[in-house]
Image (cartoon, rainbow, N blue to C red):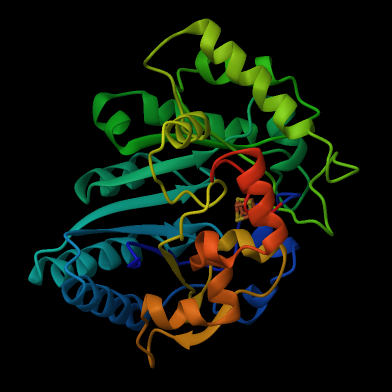
Amino acid sequence: MSKFTTFLLKVASRCNLDCTYCYEFKLADQSWKDQPHLMTSEVWRVSAEKISDYALKHELLSVGINLHGGEPLLLGKKNIRFLLSDFKSILSKNNINVSYGLQTNGVLLDQEWLDIFSEFNVRIGISLDGDPNAHDKNRVFFSGKGSYAIVREAINLCLSQAKNREVFGGTLAVIDVESDPIEVLHHFLDIGVKTVDFLFPDANWDSLPPGKKHFHETIYADWLIKVFNEYLRINDPSISIRIFETLIKLCLGYKHNMDIFGIAPIEILVISANGDLHALDSLKASLPTYLGKNILSDDFEYSTIAKTELGKAQTGGYENLADKCKACVNSLIPSFTYIRYG
Ligand code: SF4
């Protein structure tokens, strides 16, 4: 039976960037408008208590806590310290091991932040879409100015000393099919980043991702295949590209619960700044993801959420696919590697 194993806390519901493709602010789910700008200590403490109880009840030895936004660093250093201290003390009472992660756009990152993450054992990812042209095309400030220069400074800082490198988990890059895939890959390697993941801009059948005119076009696959071939040609085992590693594992028959591929139920629960529980972020491109519960007043169980229409989209796995999709998955490839949300 599946259980929630990763909890994504939206500690700030606003952002200091205005990225063109942002699924949080620009697509179907507009619930961020009703959220407080920052998560309160009440919400994160109740979240920690309930996650701890849940882990104990379901005999989970470890859970993942990911701090997200908007831009999570907007919560501020003092508050993040309080949050991490609270989580640490509450979850350690039940001897739950925790992997902490945080995804940032890097704009506010400085050495003091990295020291906090080092102290609390938080691994961070920074969003960088590639070289200055690729990045600045979409990842812009509200003035329209690109953010590459400041994000690059943040990455340089992460790579500048061993202690910082331990905190730095790599970069996330949203694919721009108009960029040169080989140049983008080599840009990461040239600046010293060897752990990269490529993300699809969130989209769906009715609202296709940028550049894609028809559902059956394969421009994103074509772009990624060029990166993959170059990655094979370079043949450096110290380079880690999660999307390829995940696909290779799936091909070899391993299970995983990465949300964009495969048919495994996804074991992630999203907790918004006001405590509202939401389904997986990828669904925000298509519909509001509020699950009708709030962490302050409700308990959460995987089995209960899995019975709701929205929950099924995330937790249903293979059984929840339409017959047509099951036939396609079965006939084309044996139960793996399709893009879950089109
Ligand atoms: S940094 Fe992230 S949350 Fe902020 S606008 Fe860009 S994509 Fe959206």
